[in-house]
Amino acid sequence: MKHYSPPALLARSTALVTPRAVTGFGPRADASDPKALIEALNKSFEEFKAAHDQKLKAKVDDVVLNEKIDKINSSVGEFQTAIDELNAKLAAAEMGAGKGKVIDREYTDAFNAHFRKGDVNAALNKGADDEGGYLAPVEWDRSIIDQMVEISPMRQIAQVQTISTAGFKKLYNLRGTGSGWVGETASRPQTNTPEFGSMTFATGELYANPAATQQLLDDAAINLEQWLGGEVQTEFAYQEGIAFVSGNGTNKPYGFLTFVTGAANAAVNPLGAIAATTAASQTAITSDELVTLVYSLPGELSGNARFVMNRLTLSSIRKLKDGQGNYLWQPSAQAGQPSQLLGAPVTEIAAMPNAAASAIPIAYGDFRRGYLIVDRQGVRVLRDPYTNKPYVMFYTTKRVGGGVQDPQAIKALKMAAGG
Image 1 (spheres, rainbow, N blue to C red):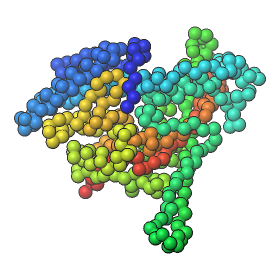
Image 2 (cartoon, helix red, strand yellow; image 1 turned 60 degrees about the vertical axis):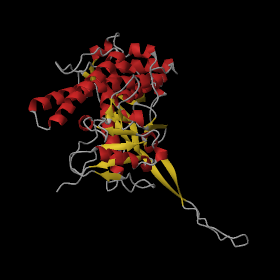
Image 3 (cartoon, helix red, strand yellow; image 1 turned 180 degrees about the vertical axis):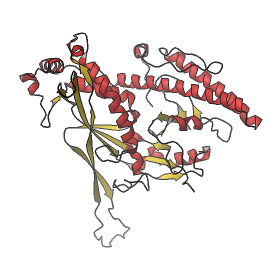
């Protein structure tokens, strides 16, 4: 895991939400100070371990103690979330977020004129798309993607491919070449030839339709590119987050959980399905089951492997210990570093299911090798001042696809089926 800790970047990362202070249980921390956040996180985790150990030793169900543990656990989760948000900002900055230079100032100025007044001139017409609307300037398009990287965890951990066509096809070598042992003078019969398979990653269309009054648009102090980018990025990232996990592929990406053995798209990839190990319980996960999940991934694919799960599942995982009494989960030790579970990074994804009968609450693997996000180049905007007067609507669209490109690189933990 690459660490991002340039002092200048840390000093600028002030947009985090301060975790809720839990009176009597958790420390307060300055959300603009990464060091203070990490110190507060580790202090909260020590308090959590002490309280949980007290409960294990008591061997009784104490309502007051349970409430204390839950509050501290929640505080730990909030501090870790704040640090994860900081890590995403640092990673985006390291990759050059928002640093794209203007390629065509004339076109950009014309685009802004179209925003404010609906003016269309020759410079803007050259950006017209066959499907209608106008392509956003390159630097504006990039600003949306950067913000989505900060919000969408899957964009941080998966491979992203930009395309200029309707889809992307990937070829797979299924091998199958025959071989055999022969003597020095024995004949060499022809062996089998290798086989190839393919998978198409089609794109679906994401849209948002924010509105603004003409008075707002007339205000020269308003940065229209920033405003529209902020309006659409949250909705785009929310929809993507769901689709990359559980999307059915109909006008949207294929979610990686749909490629697990027995799921809807288990037979779509030429390399097969994502293998799953099954928990003994419908709702509880044990430390041994997590270890089994980790070792189900081939060693050569484990170098960049990580866990993904939602916040509720992670909250319960924090209580697990190994055979020597050590907690399996460990908090971030420095800015740019995620929390660890069994020595592997943890990515919190809200769209992952809770631990319930037949659900898949945890996945483990190398998602950069395992999952491919396909972005069709360009964001299109249609300006509509007529439909909802006195508001001007900005129908904004972008085509995005996704699917599992290597099912062997991801493994899943599935809960026991219901009775």
